[in-house]
Every structure is written in structure tokens, then in C-alpha cells.
Length: 207
Image (tube, rainbow, N blue to C red; front, side, top):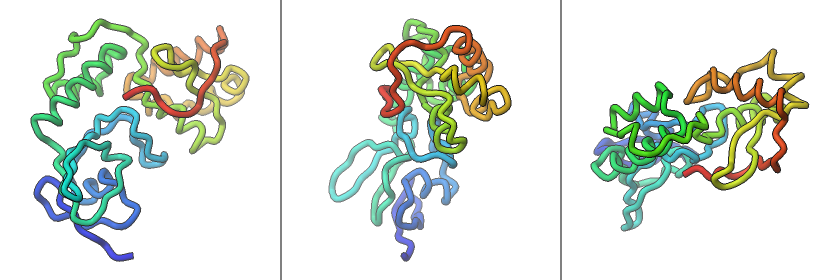
């Protein structure tokens, strides 16, 4: 099908049917920050750091650029005072879980987030799900998954699979935006003390 055009940050951008707003922006060289996005994985929209302002069909709202489809005549803004405020709060919340993450601290500097705003809950995980999704979608091993729900939700390795698969793989480690060392720690901890909570491989509670 033919290309169509939308406007991103005042620039006329060509896109193809099936593209997301993030993909359309990337083809035009426009940067939108991401944390849970990976080009090899299905769009997920968990971290919301890619939130953009969208004008379409007479309405204005905020959507996740990594999951929202690009359409003709949309007007998209990737940076504004309100968007900076949204990203700032998201980063402050995530930094309470992973206060030493270099990737988060770099974004915090760009958007003026205060790393000490919220009390530290050092799980070192922001539930982006990159490791879970990569293992399932790319490796098709399902050696790591979500456990428990709500505030207790966490990511853990499945010992029975991890002990056979993970030591020779570790491809999910560098994907982790909070630390590859943390991923290694969780793997070792899982093998020493298998998780007991009910697993859940589906939707994310992180927003």
C-alpha cells in the first residue's frame, strides 16, 4: 500500500500502513526515548517513557508511541512541558526501584527527574519485561517469567529451564536497562531458591 503522511514535531513524515508512531519517527530521524522497546520483539508499551502528544480526528491525547499506529494526517509532538513532566515522574518512580541504573540516570538528567524523590524500593527491576519477552519470542525457551501480581510482581528465572539453558545463553542480560549484573544475580538466586509464587507471563502492571 502507498505511503501516507503525518506530522511529527512540525515535520512532514512519510509512513507505511502497519507502522507505529515510534517507527515513523525513527524513519525520519526523530528520537523518542524508549526503555521496554526492542526491534526484535512485539510492541509492549510497559514503561510509557515513549509517551507522545497526539492530535487526531479533532482530539488531543497522550499515547505510547511504541504501540500506537501511525495514521494519515496525525499531528504528533514528542517534546513539550507536559511530556517532560510525564517522563520525569515515570523516571522518578523507576529510579526508586533501580537507583543506580546508568540508563535511567541519563534520562533523568535529560528530563530533570529527581532520583531521590521517592523512597528506595531496590528491586533493581522496572518490569519492562525485555528479558521475559526476548526469552519467549526470540529464544522460545520461556526460562524467565513474571511472578505474582500487583505490587508484589517480580521477574524471575524458571529454575528447571534456566539450569539447562541460561548459562550458555545470557542474551537477555545486556538487554536489561537496570543492570546485566542484576540479571545475573536474579538467575543465581533463582537456582538457589526457586520462586514459589504463581507465575504470570502476560500483561504488565507497570505503567
